[in-house]
Structures are given as structure tokens and as C-alpha cells.
Image 1 (cartoon, one colour):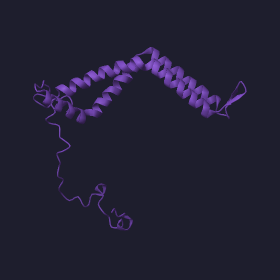
Image 2: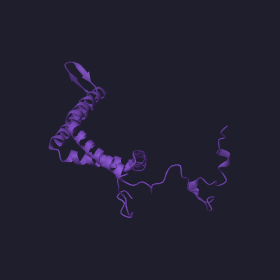
Image 3: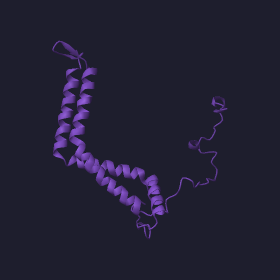
Image 4: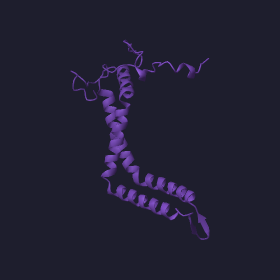
Length: 165
């Protein structure tokens, strides 16, 4: 459905700005999980092809392992001050965030700009007339009383019901 293989004309340029804006909003509402997945996959792929980021994450993982191992038995002393595992974990968290912001900032902006371009172009050019609105209701019919996952009553649940006023 995302690529429109089964449709005659899945992509085209809308001439009216209001219809284009409506199309974009509808596509964002319908495809937002696809867009999020695309952004995440691009970020991970960009992360994997960057040697400096892989080295930095490996160093951080080694530092975390060393700190957790060092503080496993009631902490350690530095200059007469006892460093507990809680203090070491807090300090390592701050160091990790700073390092990741520094190391991954270019990767983050690179993957975000590429995925933003993909999302913007798909959102503007993908015809969304086949996508249903949340205003449209689908009426369910049939024998729904005997289906347990639709909260059909089994008989002994009456005494556990909570009355909402």
C-alpha cells in the first residue's frame, strides 16, 4: 500500500495548495509508523557505516562494563571518597549522554535530513484517497456475543463489574 503497486496512479502532484496540505496531513496520520521505522532504520544504517561512532560506542560499552564491575562490591575509593554504584552510574550516564551527543550529532542530522526528505516527498506526492479517515465508521455485524476477545460475558463476571456513574 505504501508504494502503490496495485493502484493505477499512486503518485502525482496536486495543483491546489489546500488539497496538497490535506493530502500531506492524511498521509502523516496514516503512514506515521512507516515514517518512524524509516527514520530509525536510516539512523541505524548510518551508525553502522561510521567507524568513529562504532569505536566510540565500543569504548563507552567497555567503560560501562568496567565501572559496573568495579562498583559491584560496595563501590571503590578515590582520594578517600567512597564511590558507590549509584554515584558511578549517574556519572557514567552524564558522560555517556555528552559523548553520544558529540559523536552521533552528525549521524543524527544526516539520517534525519534524509528521512525527512523521504517523508516529505512521500507525504506530498502519495495519493491518499484510498486511505480511510478516522471519521469513517465500519459497522460490524454478525454473531459477536460468543467471541471471547470482544469481551463477551461468560456468566460469572456479573459480580465483578464496577458501576460507573
